[in-house]
Image (cartoon, rainbow, N blue to C red; front, side):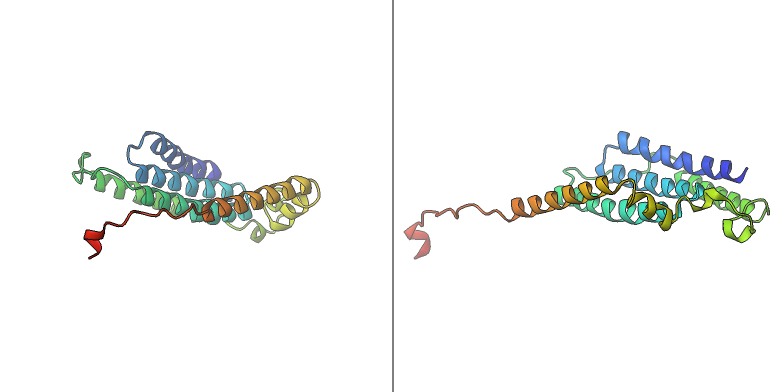
Length: 184
């Protein structure tokens, strides 16, 4: 039952983030919607007992990739000023109420006694609890999927080298005519 509640609580922000990415007129708001969607997806990974995948997802995608997206958006710049007026009345109060509801639900789930946050602490042997561990992931990755893993590493290395080569290419310096009246 608790898994269904967690899924419901995290599916809504994931969907809202996806809709924000598509409908946002400001690219910064779109990137923030993508970040919210990625964080909610990380919680869903934890609910599926894939703790390692959740940690990597949050660190790599929600951390590094989103930082890169925001830097690119800031470098490109936004050509128009933002309207600072709030269009939704009582928006702040609704957000605070929603956050308090999520926190209250999390406390109710945590203290109900019917949900175990750490599967190993229950004493039961649950085979699905080892699906997201580093050992299980490494066993599959370096035995069944080793060729795809190495090909991906090679492609990423070639792409990085190509990006560095293109970025470091310099054109010929342009000689501008010097006006003798300006220099004297």
